[in-house]
Image (cartoon, rainbow, N blue to C red; front, side):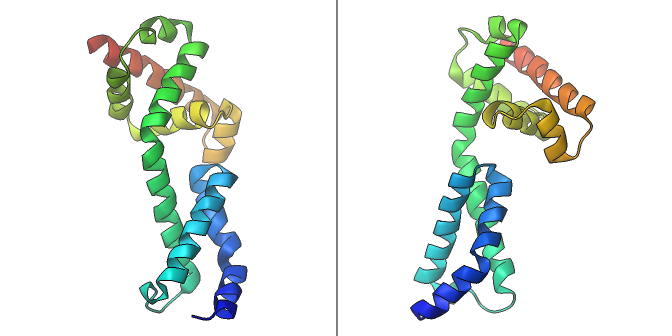
Length: 161
């Protein structure tokens, strides 16, 4: 593939690729890194694309890379959730203080996905309950309930451990 062809493809699709990663990661800098990774893979191995919709293919690669990045952060996310929850919730702080990290991470993993996602948005990304409601198109009360329920479930799991 020539440099000019690649440059044209990059100019046409880079914004869409980066926006896809940003929606998943919630972080523009990390989304730019993912977009760079996607286009580097494409530059190094253009034969991976076997025809069809190039933009759709690039978006799928960006989505997969962004999800991989989230998985790498999972352990960090879980520990940050616990640390922030402890600061904001007096009851949870008494329970979570002094617990071993492994027990807390296991407890976060046991939460239903909706609760875990709400905690991630609130405590990792620093979003307010209103911001989470807007981002997820959920009622504000639902967001508050998911976070409160998740924190209570965390306390129960950790106490049992």
